Image 1: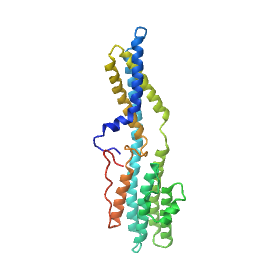
Image 2: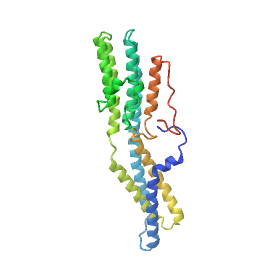
Image 3: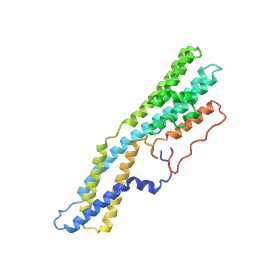
Image 4: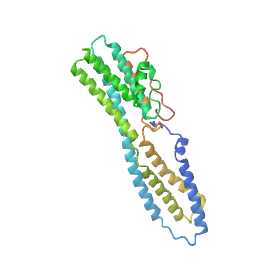
Length: 297
């Protein structure tokens, strides 16, 4: 997630460098064409590229709104994960009688593992990396049998709660409360996976890029009486603004792609780890995950 810090110029230019190269090629080609065939080319009034630019602005506005909605939904889902993870551990501590501290710690540490595993899975990373510090080797071997590792961890939660109820450590109402917490966690996982697997229409991006190139061509023809050393930088600046907005929208509508614009799942998981370990009165509490240069992991 981008922070309220100065974003390096190289990061911005790196997002549109190839698009600007294409614009430069198109601009030079149109400039040469207008210089060689200036007499036979029809007049291109500025109202035409102005109309196309207005259409581009409307399309970009729609895409930015839709993309931000997806990004904000992802952030709300992970906010719910924070709340439900805390509530789940507090419920365990409240409902279970004394003498169950070890099973509470086991389930609480597994919940921390679930948060890290879900974030890594959504980013396309190995979902069981570094989980051995939270769960046993037996549990790691168990979840390796499943394609969906975070879901397997929630199933282990459910088995422990069922065993506690059958051994008369939990009342039926307490079991229902814990089961409701697991359902909410499972819902959050499903919402994250839906956002991850629902692809924004690729054709929308292709059409938008095509219209931007059409805008560059028509504006270049309209400016055929303007000197090339002024026309080409102007076209690059205007098209760069459009492409940067489009690229920002593209990155926002995919908030789980391991980019600086992602939802800060690693940071959120570390926050959950700190909160849960403090609830358990663990002697070693990790520090919050430090930010990168201009974004949070």
